[in-house]
Length: 152
Image 1 (cartoon, rainbow, N blue to C red):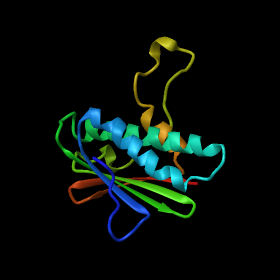
Image 2 (spheres, rainbow, N blue to C red):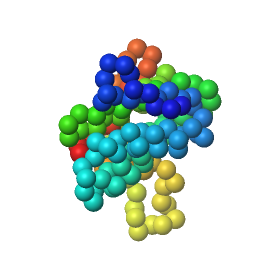
Image 3 (cartoon, one colour):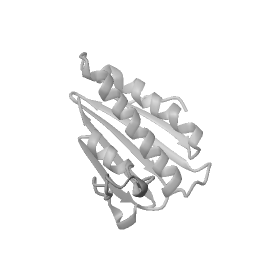
């Protein structure tokens, strides 16, 4: 599962894994390690790296649980691209398409004063949308393609 740079570009890395929850932490950590040299040399770089790792973890969890319905052994491809001032993480899978073909809104509908009615889930997309500068989704044939974009 080690990230390997394609021969044509130094600013791109790729990682392939299968849909096991146990693979998520290592893949997300590899993305963060690759991104770190492209981050600004200031106090915010650790926060940016942590946000990228958290979002990649959440996306991979969603792919395994929702797109693949928890089935193991299914392919997931991560591609990281670095450009001056910009990091992109592309996630590809062959699972079920997103409901309504789009990313859920960033709002979570609940009453924060009613602790007994707090939802157990549903915070992933709002978290991702809050941490990333752009989040894009499209269906390409039989594959989902999700792009996380972070200005650095």
